[in-house]
Length: 221
Image 1 (tube, one colour):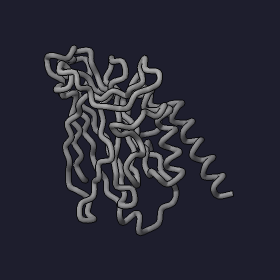
Image 2 (cartoon, one colour):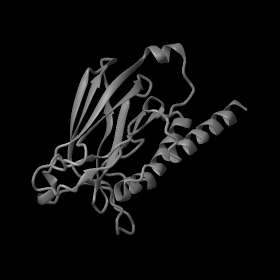
Image 3 (cartoon, helix red, strand yellow):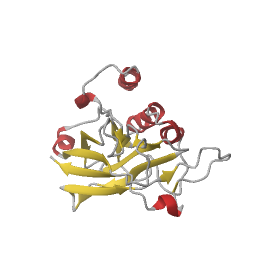
Image 4 (tube, rainbow, N blue to C red):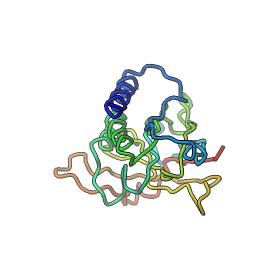
């Protein structure tokens, strides 16, 4: 009965998110209810700053869509180069759509492979696009039981390109690292007009491979 109530509560929360119910940001993380006092003491809170830093070779209309992230127990839960895209990652990379990825990662929470699903609430735009923000900040929690972080965001407009990080371990010597910085390059999800799909890979076209689309900074609070 407890598992059924847990699953029902989770799906009610998913339906609320998809309906854009207006929950404040502090309640945007999805987590399992398997929490004890030792887990709480082994958590950390980070501020994530997602920033667009595109150069003049990139059109000012280019943006990075709302991201989806997850904290997880072992590598490989969300995406990795050389693997195949899930349907959720495909929809992020092709359309900037979060919903299916949120559902997939929510299933990983239920199975205890993941702990928190992190849902970005704003796109970020080319720094020269003065009508829109080029930076977005978000806080999230992570625990020593699920110390890896992965996330993805579409490069829009594009066929199936995205930026992100995967399987980043935020523990060192059993302590949470104080900060981390990541440079975000373009990957292809291997899905658009590909039948069958091909593997996820960093884009190697010389005109694109060196472009920095954004940066991601983590600061432990």
